[in-house]
Amino acid sequence: MKQNIIKFKSLAFSICAASMVLTTGCSESEYAKINTDPSTIAEGNPVFLFTQEQVQYQPFDYLLWYYDGAYTSKIVQAYSPSSSFNDLYNKLAELGGVGSQLIYVKRYENDIKATIDKMPANKAAQYSHLSAMANALTVYMGLFDTDLFGSRPYSEAAQGKYGGTLTPNYESQESLFDQWLTELNTDLDKLKSTTTQISVGDNDLAYGGDTKKWVKFVNGIKLKIAVRLLHQNKAKALKIAEEVGADDANVMQSITDDYVYNKGTGGDGGNNTYGSDNSVNLGVSSKNVIDFMKRNKDPRMLVMFTKNDFNSEVVQAFFDAQARGDNNCAIPKYILDQVNYTTDASGKKHFDSWKGDGEPWVRYQGLPIGMAISEKTEYTGNNNYFVTTRWKVTDGEKTKTYSPLSYFNEELVRGRVDFTFPTAPKGKVVQDTEDNPLYEMTLSTAEMNLYLAEFKLLGANLPHTAAEYFKLGVEASAKAYNRLAILNKIPYYDKAHCNDKLDEPVTYDDAAIATMMANSDYQLTGNVPSDLEKVYIQLYLHFFYQPLEQFVTVRRSGVPKVGSSLIPWVTMKPNTELPRRFYIAQPDPADKMRTIIETAMTQQGFTFTDGQRPELLNSERVWYDKGAPNFGEGPNY
Image (cartoon, rainbow, N blue to C red; front, side, top):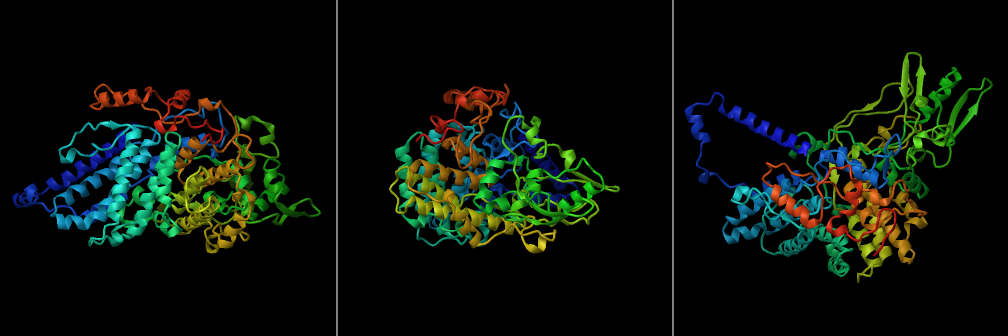
């Protein structure tokens, strides 16, 4: 893939540059110091190697946001292109880094293993916990890579340094799942070891070496595998869930158990520390999603997405421009309907207050999901979603354009975004330019408990009710998003970082979460089909921060579904023409892996292709996706 070639070229350049530094101006004695006998070089410290593995653990590769996540988020109707969907929306262009992330963590796990293997048995036993933690990260990233490509190298990967092959064999998704479950069970046995262990402490960026939390993390990965097994081996999936859920000590119980990490100065000072330098290319938030969350007073919406630009100062700027005779600029009706204003004797409007729920709720507007709706008058007239020239205000020599819509909140995943607050054309320039090393979250209390709610509804013998797991999962999701908003200092995260006189912070308290949970859409009733849909909708919402997990959830569940009263699926193309995996191109004849890759693709029944054949990417599914419902059809377990 083109982008991976660029990475390797950059790495090669860095190595060459480092070599030039070493060979410039060195005396013979200095060379002697450099040319040390390899057998006398001290071994790496497994604890520090583990820290580096965590730094390389990157489900949020910067290309995810520009390519892979941008595709999947639109396929599952979480976002819409700003100009609305067109006939090409189901086709894929260049891919990002998904499918090649395992190698970055596995090479460090292999280094840790090799270092421990050289130790005397009594000393090696002290690294049992560390070994399990390192393997868990590798399995997580292996699962991440296989989701959209199927068979991948694993057992033989990154072994060249230790005499292994440079052409690792591909292993089937089914066999990988079996191997990973075996490894994870071994990890759990290691984590329960009572022998004296080396202290990891703060060198563990997520859990500070707390093995109780790592036990929950490992069990969380087991649940991730289990939900993917449901269409191929439901009995096995339920058994895994029952093993995990049998003891609450296996299950994350609060957001302090979430895998949240900050690489700080341990990263590279760039993307690995602050997140992507690329803009987040997801599109405009779905109106169906925004409306559902507003209707249910779901406070996660306030931090997942951005406030639009139409604060009270901007609304008044439109009124002022219209009073000056500007007949082109216009506040969209769906925003003006939320404004209380007075009109003076001259006909000029004056902003008075917000209607309804007021700030910050009125500042969130999504884009309707539909094909080529930018050409339809009902979306370009008074309820204007597309004609940007009508969002432009001029005051003398100053002109500004304002967006009435909400987008993914980039500062949740980018620590170096400069945010400019909306002000009138001649208003002061107010910016937030503070850089923040990024706090990221992967496996969470919300995810684990929502999976257990799903399994309970599907018949698993678990100690708690589906409603109890569901409630804990949704509340934990809300708390997790609030935590990320505060840690990453997103725009409007507290009153001191607001600007307009009526601005209210987007962060929230437990009372707001309780208000959300009181709504019937956020409660299970005992009706299994209805309850299952509610569980999948909550997974869908929770994974707005993790677009590939969101895609996997929609793909396996068929939710959102057509005709739903929650978040409905909009049929724009036949569901057989939407990709369910990513494409794999024919390898170059000179590629040493060509025969291995061709064999793996044949065994999976895959055709080499590009992103222009979505019907092929729908019918040729990865192993665990076979038999799953088409998009929009709802669960078929």
